[in-house]
Length: 328
Ligand code: NAX
Image 1 (cartoon, rainbow, N blue to C red):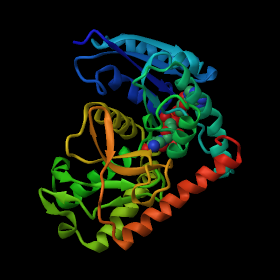
Image 2: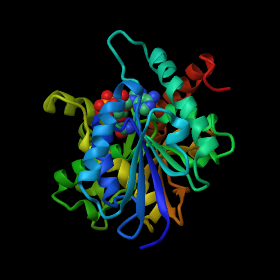
Image 3: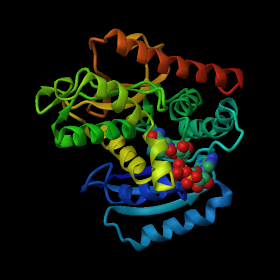
């Protein structure tokens, strides 16, 4: 057991995904079995009482690794000393709301949270944004944190990645662990590009085990539209799978992946023609707390077209938040 206690700040902690995330984070899902954690739960004032109830249940669970749990309605205090920020709380899209309105409403949340992270978080802060539109919300937060390296602000693409692994394992009768080099590129939206071109299953190229037609006409739309399908079938949006994926994202970033690829939404360094700074899904590997975009992959004309569509959407989102004065 290390003597260091790591602070994990969870926003939207009384919401569905926040609730599902907090208990596993308290049980060691991010830092492992040898690091104690402090959970800071951030909510809006209207949900402060519900967050206090979540904190009571966390206390009642007597997690050996949980040193303390606190609730806040001010991001400045909630991010004090934070090493991990799980930015889950967001403004949902309501009926009749245009995408630009949604982006603007979320800018009011992620701007101040970025500024609070800038001023109060620990030097090793790492952020994953789950609240939608996740990629652009992460960009807004990063732009409000000029003293924090931009690469510490990431967006969740891991749920899309895990959904792809699940579909492929089911289709081929293989174990998810046998699948390597799968990637989800682009935006966490229906425009995303789940890419099997480099994927191996038990060492065999995936595209020798499934047809090109299944890949393009079934696999890609199924993964990209899985969130909507879950809502339709379950009667509610993805919750436990989103929480699980957010924890996977942070655990792998901190503890490393070895040679294994995972998908993360990270600020582009210009790789694969993605404009620098856009927070875009890429295949990455993680070592020593840092991720590296997998370099030099061959991209077919099909892959380039798919990536372009999603990157254009990210570009439009960036323009919309610029026009709204949320970033410069
Ligand atoms: P809920 O509505 O259950 O919970 C959201 C919580 O956030 C609420 O308790 C609300 O009070 C709180 N909140 C709102 N503004 C806040 C603020 N400024 N500071 C702190 N807390 C605030 O939604 P839930 O189902 O938990 O989903 C949360 C977000 O995840 C949504 O934006 C959703 O669209 C997004 N998702 C993202 C996914 C991804 O892969 N990136 C997949 C799952 C999910 O759809």
